[in-house]
Length: 89
Image (cartoon, rainbow, N blue to C red):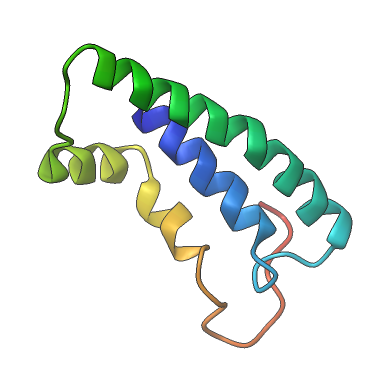
């Protein structure tokens, strides 16, 4: 579930108009977001079927931090400096 969630965040950050310079890149990311969201839904459905009814916030936050989720989350908002995004990443 964590991997699927991070993948969705990566795709969503690629769609963010404040973080991308090209419509084609954003379009491709938006198209991929659909299948990635399905994978996340399937992971959550499996957890529910296994009677895993709670997501432990602290554990999830630690997992996201260790997998570089903070860097991805920072790309979801507007650019802080008003400059175009760095397209090298």
